[in-house]
Length: 306
Length: 306
Image 1: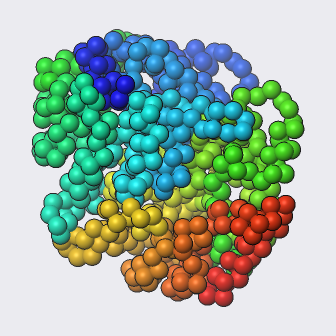
Image 2 (image 1 turned 90 degrees about the vertical axis):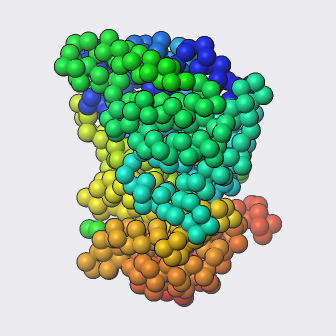
Image 3 (image 1 turned 120 degrees about the vertical axis):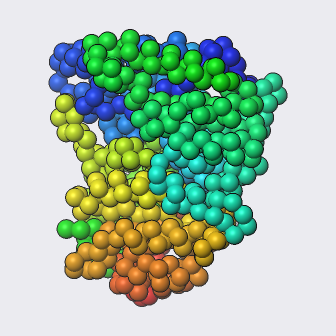
């Protein structure tokens, strides 16, 4: 089943467009999980101990909020900095998310020449043939990618993703202030660079036969809602991954244009605003409950717009 | 010691500007290493067996050509696709390269918002503080980064790299045909996008007090030598990492402009043309000898230009 149809079906079944971003900091884990893993007391390297605690934290967060979300978006940097134990922990977090019925979007932002792009696709979505047997990848349902080097760095990712029913979300107009440096620069043949990237994403599209949603998505920052409207014109059937809600200042209420092609047209990602919700309301003991309440609150707003 | 000065000293000591790219494919390893590791016969996962073979291959290649090169550039995708064992193998290859006196440039092409960029810096160059102890990173001397999202995604990498005497090489004008899609697009305020990125790299520069070379480098494809000249005007003291020689069609002879600020102004990277040199000359039994001969040939041409 093509990724666009898988995504639409998952959103319909779970009645949610909320994507939980997981960017675990080993110094800011949920108290219950940090305590239980350090109490384990095995002699380990710092990386091994931190990876075990991060894994327990991610499992606990997923268990708490799974009913309110459709997908999880692990930030790969946060696992990679824990070395080999971090990669192993990430693999188990992905399995746990799948077990809860969630899609997994690997936030990797990769972009490289053909042979390297293929290797990233094999690493995150597909698998690698070898004389030692087929080497399983992470098993993500989609990954994020950077377009700077051109479309010939995106196509090899799609070549791996499409046979697996997976998708690729290309950075188009991001949520950080630095987007003004290059993404917003005006081109002599009209419009900012991000419009040109959007046209490239549109050119690569392959719509799912049931939903009409493409398997090439776009990362569109929720901090600049006026761009969401314009990008929906340029990419009518592209799923938008919308980071920047919460800590970065974006508001779900401003994102209605994303949902024009259907409820799965916009995926609202939130990380710290869900995971650290208890700190925000001054109730540190109720981390799971506060996280679920915040995820449900975002779910309700987004579902009401769609 | 700032990265620019470390790089200049290494190039002077080793009399080489050649960077060996390591992008191991488990199906194309040197025959001697593939045989010895499979003969080990341990029951392992495919990923574990492939990672052991890849590590043995990389060690053998490094041992063969170390005398002709100044640095090694592991392509992270090729290790990441081997999962946790691949990350562990990469760490040992980095240690082996350092033991041979080589610099290590992690070819990661990362680019992400502030908190995630910092985590990538911690992963590849620095370390991560945690309640479980300080978590060591890969220990690379520099990493590559993508500028698409803006300079606020590069600065956090420099914030980690500078205290460690490490560097960051920013993609400016790459060697693949897709560079025409976005990098080459003309901006309304003059010049192509890659010139604007070059100005951003120049703005971030911090020169080493001895060499004058910056610790912010630029990735400049060797396949379009006319751009090397223009980019040297825009970034007079920036070290250029020059991929695309050999398999992609670039010629060392065309890169003289890169060396204007001194011998370390241009780093010539070659991967398959060195590692698979024996196949090219039809002498599969002499892989180490053929690789060294090709690395020495490139070294001699580049050193003659500098």
